Amino acid sequence: MGRFFERASLRLLLRPWSAPLRAGSGGPTWPRERTLVAVKPDGVQRRLVGDVIQRFERRGFRLVGMKMLQVWEGHNVVRTSRAMIGDTDSSEAAPGTIRGDFSTHVSRNVVHASDSVEGAQREIQLWFQSSELLSWADVDHHSAAPV
Image 1 (cartoon, rainbow, N blue to C red):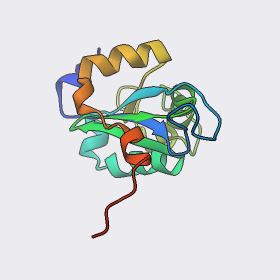
Image 2 (spheres, one colour):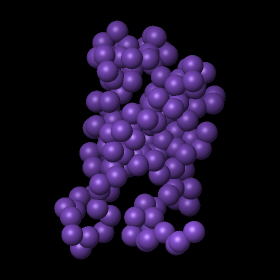
Image 3 (cartoon, rainbow, N blue to C red):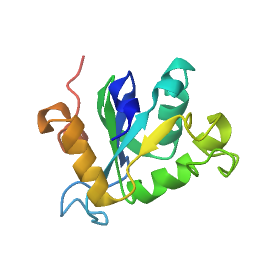
Image 4 (cartoon, rainbow, N blue to C red):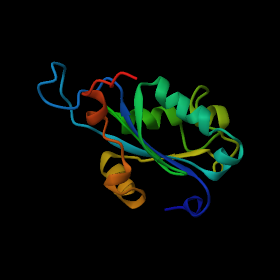
């Protein structure tokens, strides 16, 4: 892992809002996919954490874990998050991507994201215990008690 993991950064685990969580839910079924996204120290120092989280939420992913670390999950979340983030080299990152809009240099490119489903699983296990991750299945299939 890079030196950026040694300093303050935010890790995110994502998944889409509309993803069915159990067979028989009446909707399409697809495997639950999660990815690790880390807002690097330069992104934290520049106060871009909210902007990064907002982009993932607008895309329909769910935040399921967060420490001055956190994680997103959803249908094709690994590939989609890589597209949202943009090229590692900020000079090549397209406008409208996180790196295209916020990166200042290849070494200060705001975020890290897993590059594959397998890589995401490995990275998530490095930074989170399963008890630290929210299970949206529990939340989605229960009605709220009246207040």
